[in-house]
Structure formats: structure tokens, C-alpha cells
Length: 532
Image 1 (cartoon, one colour):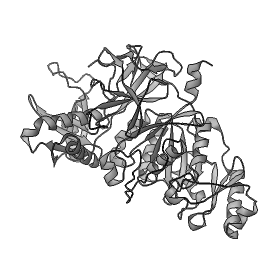
Image 2: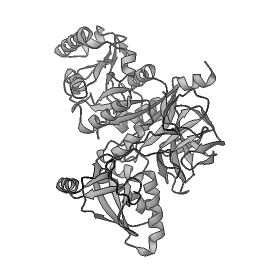
Image 3: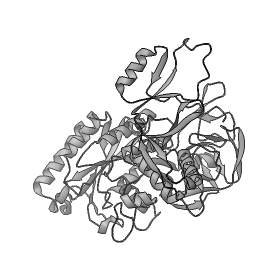
Image 4: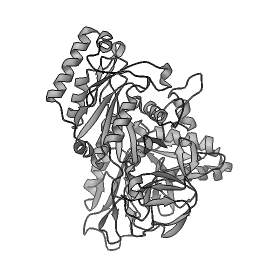
């Protein structure tokens, strides 16, 4: 193997997904703690100490105790270079999360063991399934009363349609939770609480029949656990790395992220059984597809996230790039395919929440932050080979619409600057409605909380007040002429033309009155091969 092959084999790039409040951001903190990236884990919800999660660096995240944007973090653990992407859990930020899932090779799904599969978990799982992303599952909060663990496994198989192999098995739950049994090694890890879960929890490694295990458990609970384990050994799925990587089986771990118990078993198992970076499809100039492999010598990557003002003192802008192939080196010159120009990557950084460190080189699988370069947009391709174009980023159908007004005309420059920057980040979408020169801009989002983020950031980062007015529309449809139906004198359609409706009746009425027009409820793919 070449040095590049060796470096690629060490890379693991993954996201953490969950329903809100299942413990996703807490899990992120504990993984960073294990990786030595931080010395003490913060808390997701504000406490008197004033500590916050490392990944929740934005002021709004600190105030509300939720993740509203994706954070990118990198650390080294047991010889692996780990790129961890903490995603927003709230459904209103699904669009940001979906984009992130285009940049990862695997996902860890955190489930509240007291609730089982929840709606947002199911949606994110389906995205992972469509993209062929392997999933590792962590049943969280086992130190609290939970559902029966066999019922949780049944949920995975019946609701999500994926086989489940419990790598660890809980010894009791709630007040009777005593630890987990590791099935592959037949060892018991005893649970011990730590203050706030801030430090790595000590564990004793014993066999299931060790007196310390039996003596610390209720006799009925011990008998039930032994019966469940025997049942799994006889009737459960076998552990198969290939089926895991194919997304057919999810390894399942039990524990408590808040108390930092079971997290190291998850991380060790994930790194051991997940795969290094894989190939991506690229679109060639003639429309054909080409497979770009990590070991290909030429550098290539795509922008999946843009963030401005991570350091408000410098008004900077960072484009997060997933390296698909080859090696990145600082000061290298690459093609920005969409504009047809070459740009120099003179300032690149790796991230730890809001903290940064200059990056001199990176390999396929890494995520790097490219500073500056206002020309970059979400979905853009950077490559040494100008014929390589990635079409990884999907578009999403918004469900809420609003006007954003400037109540202070004298502050219009800051207002326009802030709104343009946030639109480039993809915080919300925008449409122009009207005819001729009389067009009005409206904002569109998957959920109303995205509008709150826009207004909050406009005020705190750009000192621009704004006033939000709801629009009467509830539905957007993309339209085109049916084949052979376009009038000879019809004007050229704008990119991605849309029609807005107030309700489903209006959609049906429009369709009946305009049989030559085709409406779709999913945005057509963006042709990223076109130069701007």
C-alpha cells in the first residue's frame, strides 16, 4: 500500500443523528472527551457553571440548549483520524442535516431507550438508507427507566426494516442498571456514575458469572438477562461486517451518554467495523457518470456547508469541503468547476466547534474548512481535473414562507449584506415572485425555527433589525411544459421556475386548468455542471 492508501485507511468520517433530546449533542461531547479533544465535557442545557457543548458554539444554541447548525470536529483516537459531524436534531433543520449526510461514510443513530424510534429518527434513517450509509445504533439513557430491550430491537426491525445485532446488552435499567454484557467478548462492564458524566467513567471488566456481577444484581433481573442473552445467541442475527457495511444490519450498543458509560465500547466498535472513505459518482461533460475513488491521485472535493461569522471579529466565511479523492495541500491551485476559474486554497482549517487550527494537508475522507472565496456555494466542486463535477447535494421542498422586511431604511446596507450571506449559507431558501421587473423576494424554509435563526443572526452578527411577515402560500410546486406542449413563442423559463399555492385545492384547480403544465413536488436536480 502507498502512503496515500495508508492515510485513507485511517480515516473515519461520520455524523450523529437522532430525534431532538435523545442525547445526540451529549454523545458528541463524550466522543470528543474520549478522543482527547476536550478535557471536560460541557452540558447541553445551561447550568450555573456556564459551560456549553463544544459543538454548540452559536449564541442561539447556547441560549436555547439546542443545535441549530452543523458542527465539524476532528480528533485522533487509537490511530484513526476521526471527522465527526454533529447535526441539528430539530426537524426544522432537516435540510442542513440532509446535506451533511452526503459528506459522511457512516452514521451513529442515538435513540432514547425510554421512547424507541421517534419521527425525526425515522426520517434521517431513511435518508441514510437511500444513500447506502451504514448505521451504528446507541440506545441511550439506560440509567433511567427504559422500554424492554427486546422491544427496542423489534422496533429497529419492524419500524425501520433493518436487522439488529446487539453488541452489548443491558444488565437491568433505571435504578437497577448495573452495566452491559459485551456479547462478542463475553465480558461484563459494570456501570459507575461520574459527576455529570464530565470525566471518563471507570469500569470493571468481568465475566457474566463473576460473583461481583451476580451479587450486585437482583436475582430476578439477573435470571431475565441471562435468558435474553441465550435467546439472542440462538435466534438473533449473526454479526457480519459485510451486512453492516451494506446497511442491512445495525450493530446496537446500550449505555448512558450523560454518564459516559458504554460510549467507549461504541467508539471502539464503530472504528473497528466501519469502513474507510468510499467512492463517489461524478458527472462528466457528456452527461455520463464516472466513479471517483479515494485513492485516485488528483484532488477533488465538494462543498456541503457554508458558515459565516464563526469569528465575528473578522467577518469571515468558511466553506466546508469533503475531500473525495487524492491529497489536499495548502496553497494548491484547483479548478472551481462552476465558475470555470482556478482558485488557490491558501487558507484552510480544521475545526473543533468554534476553535480552529490551520491545515497544511489532508487526505480523502477529511473535511476541511476553506476560508474566504466568496465565489463558493453549497454543492460546488473543487478539483484538479476540471471535468469532475459532483452532484451530491439534494434540494428540499419548503413548507413555510414569509417576507423579511427591513424596518430601518437607513440600515439597508447591513440588512442586505446579512440576508445575502445567510442565503449563501443555505439557512433558508428564497424565491422571487411577480412579473417583469416587479419581483419581490420571499423566504422559504422547512420549518419556522429557521426564520428565528435568520432574524437572530441578522441582529447579533450584522446589527440589522428585521420584521417577519407570513405569506399566504403553503405549498410550492416546480413546473415545466409537458413534452411537446411549449408554445412556439414562449419565453425561456428561469432556472427552477415555481408556482406557489395556498392549499391543495388550488393545486388541483391549477392542474385542471393547465393540462400542458407539469407540476412536481420535488425540486428537480440542480445541474452543477453549468458554469455560473
